[in-house]
Image (cartoon, rainbow, N blue to C red; front, side, top):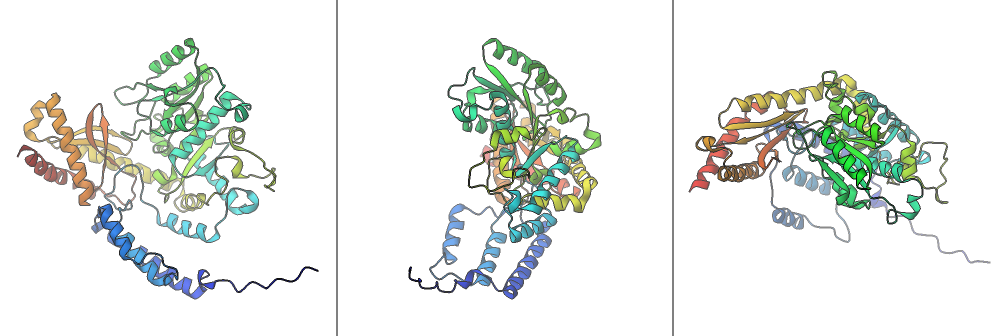
Length: 499
């Protein structure tokens, strides 16, 4: 007879916070977050603290010890740390890169999702959450007029585009490639994208075994849109050379200028040559939901796969990207495996079969709740307002003799500061080099100062300041303050350059 072993001691209870304590700390934290929202309009966008300063501060805040710390004091210190030393993309004057202000509903949704903590990899682990994600995918497709047969929520634009890339690769190479890999696959696979395409395409070609030499960068027109004529020429040249074209990537809202490729023409070429058509709509795809922009986005509905980012233009808190496909079989063909340790019913929807993740957080809830809270028309109106503000910025900047606008597309406007005594010499190599240096210095000071936050673009060798408005807190008054601010720091920096 096997002797009975000693019964384990009682569990360590500190981790399981008493309900009253949880309520008290939670209510206090929500109150502090609400106070942050109230202060944001008059606070700096960022404190721009240096890394050495932050590290020293963290060291001074009693790092983890053997016995831990009081939960209330720890939350209070951490809240202060984040509130006092962060960049706030929820600030009304944050227009850098493409990160939106997070909706309050989305913030509450993330708290709710974390509390239930479903693993949205398998239906049995997340029945309601799985159905909500499926409904969210359906809604996103209907919002843009894209016939989504399937898809899934992922971390962001890179991952959403990777999913489309892998689906295209699998469709082009057949089932055997999953076992044998690309090492023996011939002929050489090649893909096509605009010279303005986001760098995710380089990462995808690198990570998934094709190499960046497989990318054909197609030239653009004056509006930075891919040229269908140059695309077809390159496809024919590759076929003649014995290469295997398999994928065309169209951009619906480029990172630098908001350019939208001629999607309908690209779709026609893909149909003509039997190529997979993927659209990177991570930033701009949702603007296709506006009736007044339907012509500009014509052809979006013809894509085999489409990447969009709810954490960009649906204002969801990070992280929330979305990959959509017309035929869900292309996702299961690319990602599904059925090991013996999965006891999942294959007749149900298991998102583990649709993408690279097994364990998956409940990203869909914040998108689903906001969709219900605001409705389709509410989201359309917010996107419409962001575009109007960017165009208003372009109009205001064009009225200034020392500010030159380079582009205004979707909700992105690009411009630069030109000191009056250099205006007659614009285009001369020495002047252009000096203007690039000056505007880089303006951006650096802006990022450190905290009054506004923008990013940059380089357009045909010209360094420009770039404002991208995906921010429901931005108002016209914030836009109107830009010229004076840029002129003030630009003139000061230019004077120092001349010393």
